[in-house]
Length: 434
Image (cartoon, rainbow, N blue to C red; front, side, top):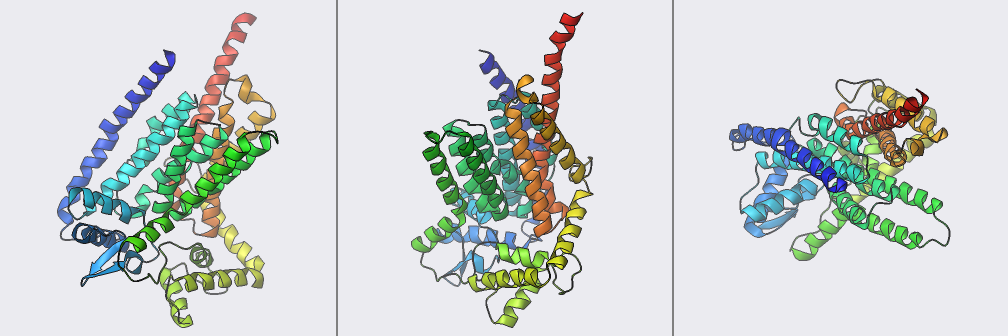
């Protein structure tokens, strides 16, 4: 009975979220509807998504653009772009029979953020981290639903939340339903943003290894963990499965470019975010110039192989210079807040680490009745560490760092819940003492 009442309270909170902040943002997008016919998106790939949705309506094709009765792979027009938004907008166009618009793009981003917020809060609630869950639902709307836009970046905070479902479910030994949902969520995340999908997979791998080390060697959990890891790896390949299915089903020439951002491209150009001895610039045009000079197609498999060689060559040539570049980029993220208003990111990371280590060292998690808090804080801090790594290896831009706020809120909520439970535990002691 108590459990049912708690879930009823959670449902009421979600209903308030949907009818309040989400509904306002969803309806506010309509104000910009008049622009959809006279102004393209300032994000070039977004306009290609819309063209692809029109191709879905006219030819039943997906991840393709119709040009002169020919089907062109979308990767040839939306270069170095993840396929998730285009695929989802094509699915919407197939259902409605109409070309997707910029309003549809903004609403899709809002829906993805809502899904991430509710799913993560629901998992936390199922773990009996009730205060943490409600804390996220109360403060999350400003970060998840307080904005809108037509580039893919506006959905990234929702994708980070969904990427955390699987590793958190594994670490806390949640039900098969949560683990299965986490695998599906990881596939969606990888479709929308490859780098966030890689973060989710890296934490999944860590959670599987940690769980396997805790289990006895003869445990029946090991085959299950191995299966989860295989399925997670399959989810990480979701963009490849989508393009392979398209190529098998539709008459179209092979794509010259890969349907991905490409890790090597980001790593090499990331050396150019600050001034450097090689004159590298963090600019896609710089990468395209390198491809043209080498006589290869920009963002083709050959291009990404070349970028790997260049990146490793720069590290071998002057590792001190590379370390200096990475240090400068790390500092740029550490000294600024990602949560507004809030302390600098580095201070948030330091406070979280200090609390996790202190609570673990003194065995306080179980004493305050919050053992699941260890895994929740560990996964949250791991995401903060991965975003710091992203800033170091790629770029410390505020736009790319803001999605980490999903787990800054979870971390903050877990610390609040730990403190509340510790206080509650101490109250009977005070009473007996008096």
